[in-house]
Figure 1 (cartoon, rainbow, N blue to C red):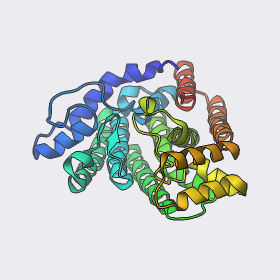
Figure 2 (tube, rainbow, N blue to C red; figure 1 turned 180 degrees about the vertical axis):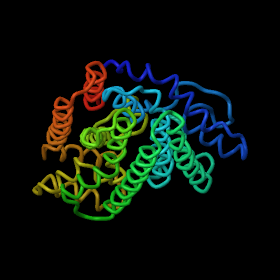
Figure 3 (cartoon, rainbow, N blue to C red; figure 1 turned 135 degrees about the horizontal axis):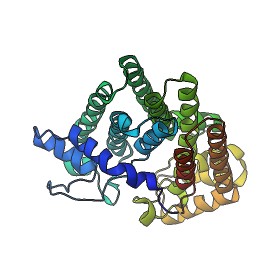
Figure 4 (cartoon, rainbow, N blue to C red; figure 1 turned 135 degrees about the vertical axis):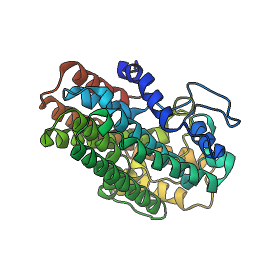
Length: 340
């Protein structure tokens, strides 16, 4: 699918705002690690371009602000804060998951070690708090800026709760579908919720609209993570930037959780493989075949599309500016219909 125009429309000012909050030079290693993670520099500190992520959450925030009738540049501090919080979580996730590559490059901890990577993640989180504090300067009323800070802090805490659950699930034999969906609603849904909610908070003064937009974000986040779990099993490394190695790592994404919950021969095959001391290529292939036989791919795709449809139904019931609404709808399609 073609990348939505909003990515390009917002990107120059968004990146400029991001760089302004990360322009300090001392201690130089800290900011070099941060800039490296964001794709701006190589590990020696030489400038690079095009290495970062798509900035999904800040784009959703800016679109939400426009959609409710606001001026999107006023939401830049919130958008920057969202991107910094997201990247804080990625740096720490890479350590926890032992991922040595992200976006076709070594991860921060793989180059500088776990301790320094933790410092880089902490710096990103602190920078996010500083960024959000600039909302009043952008014209957001003080009381609403305080509420925005509470919203982002709550979402960050909820995201960490989800990450704790996700790590706990790796050590359990069984995880129910309800437990999985609750975890994903926290780990991924919370920050998507905050993205649309913060954009709406900057753009209008109606609490019911903030709540509705947050719900849209929560549903899109859940659908996005389900799709990401599918990529973890059936994805292609050249498309995702990381090996499709969730099975080899015994991760309990939705395809596995669904197959285990169904029981029968497929569940037994998955359980046997996950209980083995090591998983070879043949074992991984056997698990993927078992997931297919259990109908896990179809179930996951159906669930992702169901949550997307719920999100779009909420959007259709809101009085939004037509063009940003269409862009939000297009962005939902883009996020959830990615190829394998």
